[in-house]
Amino acid sequence: MARPMQERAQRTRELLLRAAAEVFDELGYAGTSISKILQRAGVTAGAMYFHFGSKEELARAVIREQAADVRFPDEGDGLQRLVNMTQHLAAAMQRNTLLRAGVRLAVEQGEAGFRDYAIYEWWAEQFSRHLQRARELGELLPGVDETEFAQQLVAGYTGTQIMSQISSDRADLPQRIATLWRYLLPAIAPAEVIGRLDLSPRRLTTETVA
Figure 1: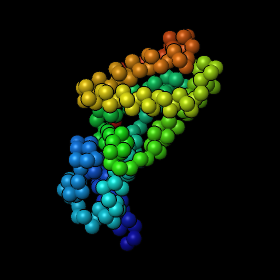
Figure 2: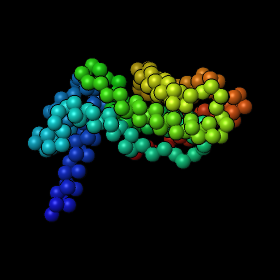
Figure 3: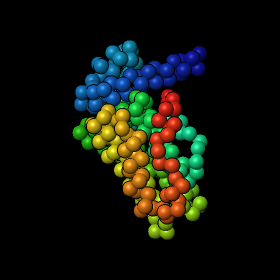
């Protein structure tokens, strides 16, 4: 009996998380209310408070779990793998509600009254792994610090997606990311390495992202 109850509770939590992501994505933190989330999820307040004690807790969960649906393509190695990863994220940002909401809330959290840097550190760690592989492949210039550059890449990506969201509702995000790489790469990689990298959005923008 305990297992069906646990599974039902997990389904309810997932339903709330997805509903919250939809409303946060549409209205932002300030424009979202618990009642709007409950209406979207079709659950009672009691069910919500069993899992989340407040709107802030829901927002933190959406931020923390923003990449739960993202499945990166197993293509390339080193710097090419990292470029592919960022272009795949650009595609996901166009149609993955949980990711979009988590990114929006991470940017807006200051005005919401809380500050949680952990998700930015998490993304920097994901990028850093591919930069470390690029170092093993001899693709990086001697003075490049993989951890430091990963943090700058997160910052650059964050600013780029905000500008894209404002200018085109992220329709031009893949091209903006390609441009970002075009200017960043000379600072970290030799010309011969850059010359063999494919920065274009290519098919990654048409892949299905859950």
